[in-house]
Amino acid sequence: MNLRLSPRTLLAAAGLACAASVGLALLAQHQFHMQPCPWCILQRLIFIVLAGLCLLGSALPAALLRRLLAAIALPFAAGGMAAALWQHFVAAKTSSCAMTLADRIVMASGLDVRFPEWFEVRATCADAAVSVFGVPFEFWSLALFAAVGLVLVLNVLNPARRA
Figure 1 (tube, helix red, strand yellow):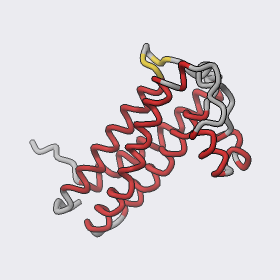
Figure 2: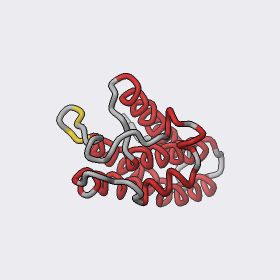
Figure 3: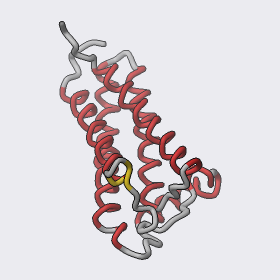
Figure 4: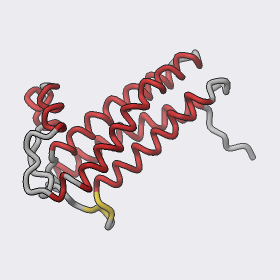
């Protein structure tokens, strides 16, 4: 039995997983009162970008275009991993995370003002440090960024397989 998935299918799954992660973050925020810090919001933004790039790539018929979009998306996956690690090892250990790189990016986007229910920072990094099933929330994010990064690398390195 051959269970290999095509690059297009993997990209579609990665895009849907990124979109679902944003949905789960919003559910956690609005139903379970897990308020986001600047690094949470930055990761949310990165997941939205990755979802768009992965879903667009999965819809493209040409392998070369899929490969190009995967290459464009790779730095976002790496940046998401870096943001999750920074959140856990640095930002969550401080009492204030005001005006960090994450704050500046979120504020520069203007999304925090335009869509505050999705992108407004509502907690400090220390206050936002919570666990789900005993695993810090940002490590769940890190795992998804790593999985998406792997899918992107596979798409960049193996463009010959057809969907």
